[in-house]
Length: 298
Image (tube, rainbow, N blue to C red; front, side, top):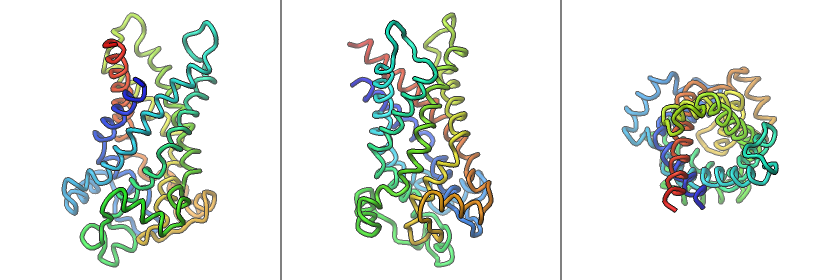
């Protein structure tokens, strides 16, 4: 139970801290071959503020927190479960293969548990932005009818985009990306702790744990980032304001590379670094602090 609670709190705190960067990354990722409405980190943040105010920075964050609490809780709890399951008798730490396996399993569990909320969060992040046809039609922040919230958005996807299948559009590339990402995240964090927080150093050092988490998240995201772009593209492909349509994961890869070039698989990567480093750092620190606090108070 403590892993569920600590993981949930860690997820909620970390994602709220980096909400503007998270939304900006998504906007970069889902822009197709048409002239980009959002270019550059500072101009995009300025545009979001000018057109939508403070809420432009937080658009979709409520849904993201609703999603990330069970997502993060299930991920940390599943990791601890698989870690205990795979631990060899007489040992206190997993070897690299077992740790990667535990992390990958945790990634699959967390995605499968919360995916409809993930696609809903993406839609709410995008639906008020002026992208593609919404720019020409006068839509976007000022002109389009906004989806009112989490439940109505999920109902709309269910009714208009194929029922349950619509709510799970993009699940394959998401799982394909999240499983190795989470595996690398935990592996890198545990290894970095050995070198950056050795026994002779204060084990409660927040700054060192933040650094370990930030580096771990950055390394893992660099390797798996193209799959995150595919995930977002597949999640918004049913929206009226989005001009591109894909029949599946491989069709999306082929179409993106042909029409937008190989770098399209890395759209929003710089904004993502600004998001993922503090988010993962805060997430690991919050998780360990909550877990230690609950253990101490038992």
